[in-house]
Length: 169
Length: 330
Image 1 (cartoon, rainbow over the protein chains, first blue to last red):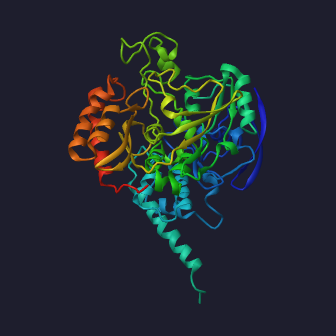
Image 2 (cartoon, rainbow over the protein chains, first blue to last red):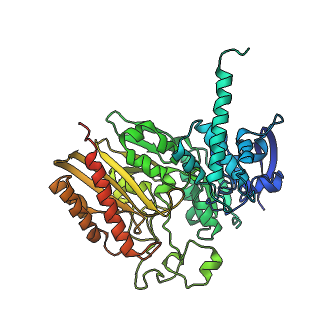
Image 3 (tube, each protein chain N blue to C red):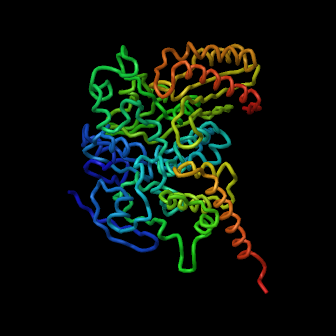
């Protein structure tokens, strides 16, 4: 099999990984780097469970990207979302609103929501619906997910205001 | 499903890309966004020997407006960037609406305009796994000699589901194409064929490099009717572009997508609007005329009677909306 080495920066860590030309990004993340948070679902761009973020924070589908085309690039997976200081506001909101049932879609939904908030910090209802249309939960509806996303928007906006506000104390 | 093996070549520039495409013969294909091609490869519908990576090539990038107000969109521009571009939103809203209606946001963050324009036609008998297809006789699309949709059809009737194609046809766009033989420009109207197999006139060694939209002051809209708003192919789409005032319409182009093997220009309906102006009676008459304009419609993804009523409804809806938009001044 045709093997190539690529350099991939995942969640800030640089990796030199051997890949076959037909390896998709999700295969490399899961099978070569052991990052099992990103799921392999429909492999046809319909379900969104393989969602990751590229350099520009946009949500992309790792099942429809050839790993070899990502040589030299950086990406964020669900494993890079929480920090030692705690969960990301989107993750925290998913917990608080019970926006998780079986959990298979959760990494994709969280990456989708995080990408939305980083590219559009104050999305309206239509923008939330538009973003979430690309990541599907088959257990239940998107109501709790949307409630969680709205909570994350409020919390992130409040954090930004604190940071931008007058000197404290 | 796993991808079959292939060779991968990363093109450093457009010259290298067309050279590799020419050298690779029938087995070579370009890979841009990959959101459709990789799925077709997984399903065994195509099996390229060599994929030529053209993602991010500078020559395929950029959205520029010329001195005369014409617009050039690089074929490699991502659909998200096209849909959000301020000039496109302001002057050619139908193009932004069409770009935005493709797939999901995730898909649009990867998929390119050029890819959407040459999107392969789809059929529920062929766009399936290889095992699924093996349970039926091969059809026109799979090197057989029949059509499962219309048994008597002499050609493949698979549906062209591109959303940007009808929008750009209504705007009278042109394509810039490149091969080792040189560069050429062609009207988009001459690009599509009413044939699900040979659905475009793109030569095997050619790459679409840019789309050119002429500078006319148009009122333009695109609408899509699908089973759900996000991430779906249309049951029917309609793009319309009119120039002139309601009482003195200079041109009216109406193009229906996702109802046939090519985007169908509704000639008679457009002609009625030019002859009679943009008013309720003429709009009704234009809606009536769509049945004849559409001709024979295949029972594919939705029944033909439904498609015909749908397009008629979309024509009336879109023209009513356009009638209320103030025409731009030249």
